[in-house]
Amino acid sequence: AQLAAASSFGVIIPPATARRIADLESQFARSQSDLQVARDHQPSLASELRESATSHKAAQAEVDRLEATIERKPRRFRTLRDNYERRLK
Image 1: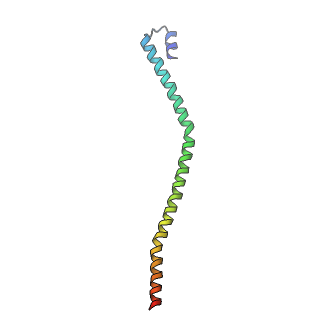
Image 2: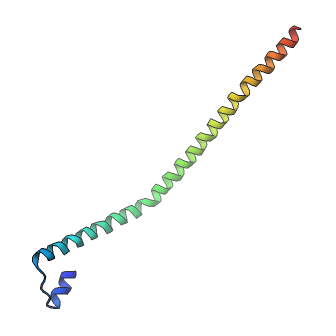
């Protein structure tokens, strides 16, 4: 596109420069395409991230519940032992 505009004004562009401009335009087009692909994937990636965070929260809640249960067990056993010892007296 740049080359056509330049030649229409009678500007002479050396072949090496013309090739470099064409390469850069091609790279730019690929970059735009890659950017569009990334934008298209962004919503699904965001959804996956939200699902993962929700799953992590659920797993953490289960860990917290189990830890609380583990903490209660020694107290429960101590209470049972104390009650048993009192009955023996």
